[in-house]
Length: 137
Picture 1 (cartoon, one colour):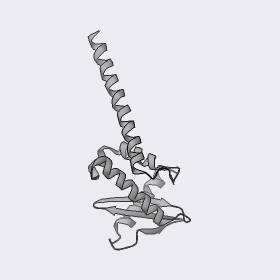
Picture 2: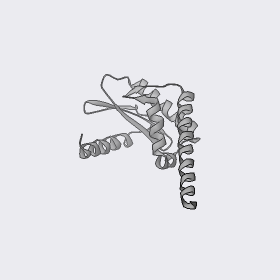
Picture 3: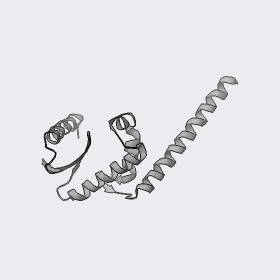
Picture 4: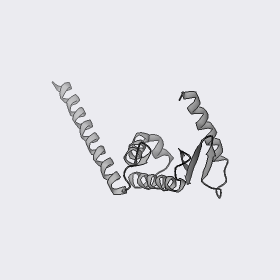
């Protein structure tokens, strides 16, 4: 799909979702797909699914994702997602693979992400020490 087509879909779906009232259904039709969304305070989590996919399961997956984000960031907000979008994607990758729920355990997802954080921090420390060592030598 071209970047222009992706931008048009994003714009269309954003307008559709933002125009809906809070008491309206969280599912809507868009072309040959369905859009499922859920609002948490000022954050909207939106996903597109096939006609045959279950909307309620999708809402539960969105909710599970937000629960994990809340635990990781401590009450997730827009700034957490803006400045740590790589971590938000990493968490999503632990939950969903190829459009299917991979891991439903919040503890397991958080453990894996924390282990990844520890490895990343260790590598950064090693790089810093190597740079310091090369300057002094």
